[in-house]
Image (cartoon, rainbow, N blue to C red; front, side, top):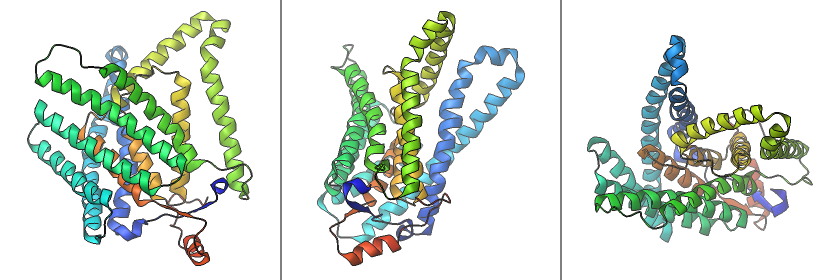
Length: 370
């Protein structure tokens, strides 16, 4: 981001955590994406198309096979998560010289991982779920605070605060609702639905701010390739946003019947994503698409230059808003840990440090240079 007057440098490379860790998190990102598509989304699509599956046997068999593959991937993702967290937490504990926040976040993240393992063998009741959510919230606060302190740029701080508030909205909804059920209270918890909706809005906002914090390239950049990519992204993104924002109105002018069919199709898509990722789509659909485009562009850009932040951001937002499964919570924790390993060095550093940051850039693993 030339406009901010800083020189980007990964503060920790994959090699520093060991070759096993590097390959584990890269494979984890790919497996998590496939699990999201095949298990959390496609399986819900099969439920939505139950009538069609009854009429055509091949539809039922196809969705059943994809769901089985997705469920297998869920277990595979969980194993990779445990392996990556164990290696990273062990390396951080062995390194020593932790800051105040890091010294608290390390045992908290270790405790959360241990609780997850225990609950795999012993199904937690309501009290166990409450304790798990409280520990998750504590880990989230510590990691977000560590990121806020170690990243002085306001674009990144705004992004991480928005993400933290978003996940906190879901944790509040889950914790308070479970606590009322545990205490057998029939009353509706205070502000539970309002906080849940606000959390979803903050999550969508965070997915847009990711582009500002990590992916934006000024049009006056000397890098012609980056400048051309930025112009193409802005043109495509702005066109898609405006088209989706006014699509219902334009279709109503063209043919009300077509507009009604598109609305029903949108409701089906919203139901699938609500079941799979927790998004209710109460905001305009164009806003969600804008967040998806900004997040996707940023993650791909960071992965092409080998930044840990690319994998971290990928895991954080692929976990979705509703962390209904324990491995989704661990995905968020691992993503935040990777973000905290990724650093920026200001342009005021010495020339030798600046040259080192350029010569020691991590190798690209998508076959492209920024």
